[in-house]
Length: 320
Image 1 (cartoon, rainbow, N blue to C red):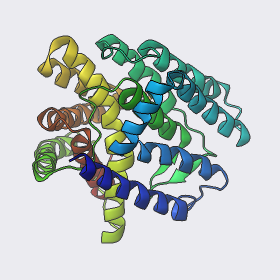
Image 2: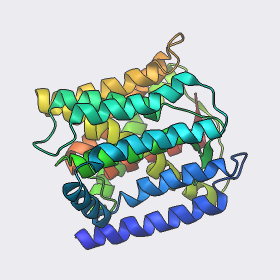
Image 3: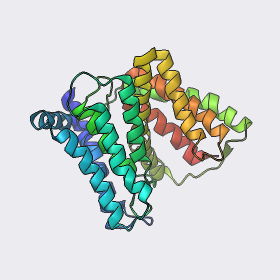
């Protein structure tokens, strides 16, 4: 099973990096700045491979200083890329070391028992701070046409290094080798959520039909990109860390509910001065579906498939 997981993740990593290298600087993203994103994306994709995860854990066990040096190197990497690209957003520049530093400090430099729930929540906020850094000059186009700045990609590297390598959580399963059962539950959740949320979205005036269909090839690439660069990453943070922390504090039902509420609140307050209540309500409902899939399967990738498929339907056929 381990070998199968490594093969699947390895194939995904190689294919995705090839697509990013060939087309990642398209649609306005510019070299050489896109190369910074490509390197960060490579770190994320490679750390999804179980064999690489085991090798990295062994390296940290032999060289404990890497537990601190790698997060700080990621922060310096982001800061250096931003400065070279001409950024003078000093708030963003400060967030690189602050986010990586707080996450590393609160979890501790050495592997011991699994982190306590409050440690996980603080670390999640710190990783999210890095995730939120958006440098316009440093972008890459991922399969399906979405743009990603450097901050989210470095945050993924940081999250995987902390929660898979240095402090491996027993519940933080990012394996891509999903079976028929996991895929079936993921897609069943999509169907139920669509049946409930779409009518509500139309009723409250949040959704409207807006077809953006550009053919089956574009649709397939968009689904792939949404699962790999939106669904799985967000599920790693919200289900793998936030929901799991609440579950360890107050149980599975509370974890599911509170994880969904946090997910909904962040969408509600995407523009703090103009909260979008419709967005918040539907995002909370979606969070319940994603969290249910995660609880039933134990696989973050299964929740990521549900998340990616929901975003796929929304981005191609519906609009806010």
